[in-house]
Image (cartoon, rainbow, N blue to C red; front, side, top):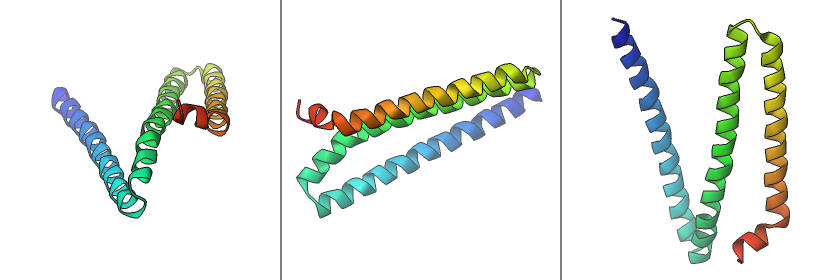
Length: 116
């Protein structure tokens, strides 16, 4: 009986993730269509350069956010609230540092990244 519930939960979470990825893919497809019709090949070039950068930043944020939330929850469920709070503070600091790095790279090195 427990295995059936586990399979049901696994299927639920996996199907929601797949639907989310399909939604994001449809968004990118629609965005590509409108950029191609509105701006043309220069817009498509800019979009194709920006999407991998967006995916990298999005992935880094997800890894930090989800990983930190899981570790924080584990600490708190074990009754180690002080360690959980320290981990939460450290994850906020690391996320802020990553954000600052991404912003500075975008502001000062975007021309070098594109024109290399």
